Structures are given as C-alpha cells and as structure tokens.
Length: 148
Image (cartoon, rainbow, N blue to C red; front, side):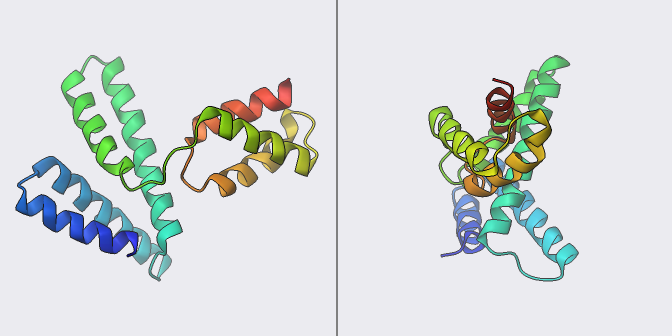
C-alpha cells in the first residue's frame, strides 16, 4: 500500500473516530501532496511524499519553537500535536550514532577535508537517510566531522 493510499484510509478512520485534530492534519498533508503534484505535473511516488512530509515536519517544528519563544504555548501545543501525526508517516528516525556512521562514511567517500566540502557531503547524507533524519542534526554532525 502506498503512502497516499494509507493517508486516505487513515483519514476515513479519523472521521469515523471523530479525531478532529488528526483528521485536520491528514487533510493538510493530502493538500500539500496534491499541490506538489500540480506543481510538478505528475503523481508523486512514496519518496516524494516523504520529502513533502519532511518539509511539513520542519515547518511545524519551527512554528512550535517560534510560538514557545513568543509565549504562545497553546499554539505551540497545536503545532506539536500536528507534528506527532506527521511523524507517523515518516520512516523510523535514525539515532545519532547511526547518523554519525553515515556521515563518516560519506566524508571518506567524497574525500571531504574542510567545511568548504559541506556542499558535497550534505546531499549524499540526506539521500542515504531519505526522511529518516532531521536535517539540522545531519548538518551539525557534518560540521563536527569536517571541522574536527
């Protein structure tokens, strides 16, 4: 079953169970996927859907942090609730140790020696993790590896 089919089924279940927040988040996600399909002019495969979900997860994290910084905990809680729903559709997140191994391997493969080589390393690492890692953490680990 594709991710898009799973979203449709989960949306129906959320309707039946009267889970308003979950239903709203799934609808937003389906809308974002549809908009991306319209932009590209073709249907998205599961990898592209995961990239869309990753973008929405990043937006939710940033919004929640912004709301917390501006003392709006009720809005931050709403964003974090949506974040939990969205993360259900992402692959299991890699741990820091696993990510560090991938970063070390990629740095060795591309022969990166300094921070100037981040442009070579980051796309390779992100391609290998395919939605299973937070970009900020990957960036931090790459910087540590290249500067250390």
